[in-house]
Image (cartoon, rainbow, N blue to C red):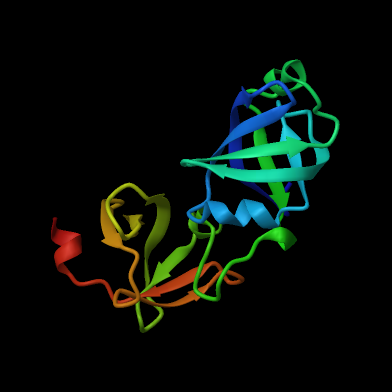
Length: 172
């Protein structure tokens, strides 16, 4: 499961030919156009790989035609199922990261001193994502925009992020 990423959730059937409507969890929903196959997870014990036959972007959702899903009843049976992909199918730029990979990372200052740990990434605060950091000092939560001016070095393999966080963020 660690090599799979949740990229969306089936919200409804679309039409009568088995097309499913997907709520995408990706910033760039156009990435769905490159997926050759996806995994469907309906519950914790089921995981089925299906070939993607056709993809359409419709407003803010994605419409998928999947192998073996040929009518509305088949599509309706998948409502609320998660859509996952192999990590190898993703097309991230060099400075892009998945939220799942960032949560739990340790924040260090430029001298290597431990500041805290990333508890969450807030994506609805505007044009820049915001990191929720639990500080080591007093377990206080602070919120810092995820910008290069505050975070200079991300090392996902080590699970660390070097930050130059102004003291004002700690005093709010």
